[in-house]
Structures are given as structure tokens and as C-alpha cells.
Image (spheres, protein in one colour):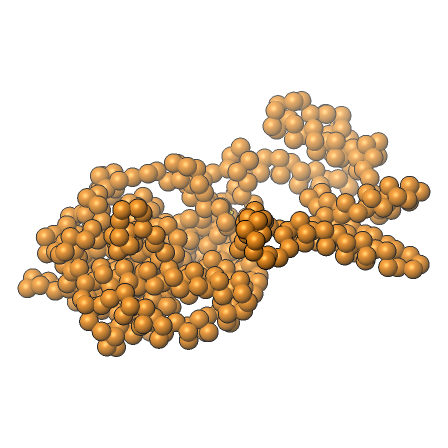
Length: 511
Ligand code: SF4
């Protein structure tokens, strides 16, 4: 059973850590290597041939008839070797002269009418319209012909029941990216089945746990950050990483040689990031207040409360890192979010509610003791290689620079980078108090709107699409096969995301 292409024989992919070309070069250099993918493919073919020559009486080869799958190439070879054989199928071929075949012709003719204005076959339509056995199918056909991304929704009462009045920033971001995606993930709780192994999302969790472990060790007397060397950083990490790796994802990172190689690369990224963050902290007077600081739902900080007509909606979350400094006038906080991928602060993301974590997190932090929001940043977790002519430390400070916005007050800039190491974001990322307050206020307003629409039951498939580049929220979406959104349909609607800089943001939020 299942004699499909890719299964019989088993397909072999050249996706090892060392690819075929590299293997050939290693072998040419005189090193002992292992089989390349061509040799694996030959072995898989041999296994398949051995399997089908084993039966002593009968051999059945079966495959599925789905259009998107192809039968195994062995089927053709067997048919060539034994010309008297034929493929038996229980699938009924459509006959254009019977009713089923006629209905298919009518469907194609109506599609051509809807798409290109070609006049449909009126007599065929009249024939089926008269037959009550086809009434339901005909009306389904007509409905499908002019299908639009519907205004899908659930009732307000049901929405309030399934979502409740608590949530998180990432949930609101998902809603703003596409209400149906939010409904599927948080309402239906539909999740792709996970396979055992280390996936990109797990890498993020590992990096967060490792950096939190490092900072906790640092805070518990791991040494003076100002004088910390790279060796001190590595020694602290060596103390915390083995336990984290053992616990992480059921031990997937220690499972086999490939996983261990992946773990080594991740650890290298963490070492670089940990070193960079100590250098960043040593360059100013900000100090770490806490790591993995929770607000709302049992956290150390109170929830953010969004006032909605139906009642208060409580937002909770966890701040990767919260830093603070104080002068005679005020206390200043900044939040830092670690990112294993590329991430930068973008005013459009805040305006459209696609990235709300940083502004909401800093709002949660400063609300407590009326402190001032001094900055919100993403910090990349990555390995660094120095270019020719630069030291590794210079490359590190450049590559792992904080990405976000800083309050452009002399005391804050001094507290961030007194040594002028290039930690501050570029000019475009230094904003005055008005802009900082507006970012926080708008994040609150756009969160309230999203929470309100969510609780009203909005569940339409309306993906956000960036005008520049045309990328939509559908990319990598797990729900593409069930949401009914089809960009090929003429009326498919997206929520367009316009690019914007600080000036555009201030103008648009001034209304
Ligand atoms: S595929 Fe696109 S439209 Fe469908 S749920 Fe995902 S984001 Fe929404």
C-alpha cells in the first residue's frame, strides 16, 4: 500500500550538516567520508526492488488517486516489464454524456462565465435547474462561483465565553494580523501536531531560558558587570547551561549528533549575546531590575487594564529583561526583548497593532511607580564574526546593538552609553517625550480596539499585508487550509499596512 513517489523508493534529501559537494571535497582532500545522497538513493532503490521481488505468489502495488500525489515510478516500470498487466481502479471516470459529466461541464462553463464573461451553456443550466435532485448542488455551485472572503463572526456571547476578559499582547498582535487566525488559535485552540525534535520556535525558548539563567546567576553575585571579561561570562554560562539543555524540550538538544551540533551553534549565539549584554550594561548606568518579569495573572507587576464597554480586559505578559536607572528627577525604565530572528522597531507595526509587546511591556513597568519610559528594544541573539580590520568586540557591539527607540534626553543617553560604544540606536531611533508617550498611548488604544472587536466575535479571514514587499500574515500560517481565504479570488481583501516613519506616525495618531 502507498506505492507513491517519494515513499517507494524512499526519497533521499541532501540536507545534512555537510552536503554532497562538501563531502566530495573532503574525500578529494584524502579524508575518510561517508555515503553521499546519491549512494543513499541507490540503496533506497535497491531496498524497494528487493521488497517487490520477495513475494512468491502475488504482489499488489496500490497508490492513491489524489491529483496532488503521484504514483511511484516503480508502477510504470512494472507495467513496462509486464505489458499484460493493467491498473485497476474503483474511481469512476466522468463521462461527458451522462448527468454527472454534464454537471461538471456546467460547472466549468459557469466558471468561465464568472472569470472571463464567456456565455454559459444555457440549455445545460436549464436542464439541471429543472431537476430537483440537483437543486442543492446547483445552489452550492452558484454560491462558490461568487464566493468572497466572508465577514465570519461568532456571536458576542460565544466570543466572550471562549476568550474571556484576559489576554496577552501576542494574542492581540495575532488578532490584528488576522482575526480568523486568532479565532483558530485562541478560540478553537487548533494546533498543528508537533513532531518530536528541535524546531525554530524551540530555539527561541532555549535562548530565552539560557539568557534568563545567565542573568539570574549574574544577579546572585556572579561578579561585577563593569569588570566582567569574556572568560567570566563563559564561566557563568558553563554553570547554568547544562541543566537548561537537559530540561529543554524533553532533551531534544542532546538526542543525537545532529542535535548536539545544533546545540553547540545555539550555545555560541548565547555566549556572544551574554557577552554583548554585559558590555552594554557596563557602558552606562542602567542596571538589570529583573529577567522574565511577569505582569498580570500572578506576576510581580499588575496587569494592564483595558476599559471596554462590557467590562475591564486584563492583559498579562512577561518582560524578557527590565533595566532601570534613577537620577534626582525620576526613575527610568527600559525593556529588552530577545529575538532569535531579525527584528527591528517599526512605527507601522505599532500603528497597526502588529507588534505591541514592547510598548505594552514598558507601559506595564512604568505604571507602577510613575517612572519614565526610557527605551524599548529588541536584542538579537546571534553569533558574530569580525570583518577584516575590526576586533571581535567592535563587531559584537555593532551586530548586537539594541534595536528600538530611546528617549532622547541627555541623562538617558548618558545612562545608556556613557562610553560612546555605539549602543544607542541611530538618530531615527531617538525620540522625544511626546513621541514616546504617543507610542504608549497608541499601543493602548489599538489594543483596546482589538480586544473590543475580538469580544464582539470578529473572526473574518482578513490578513494584514505590507504594501512594500506584499508580504501577508498568511506566510507560514497553520490555518491556510481551513480559513477559506484565497488571494486568487477577485474580491479577496487584505488589511493594507502602509510604511511609516516617526513623522507619519505622529500625524496619523494626532487625529
Ligand atoms: S492563511 Fe491568511 S487569511 Fe487564512 S487564517 Fe492564516 S493569516 Fe488568516
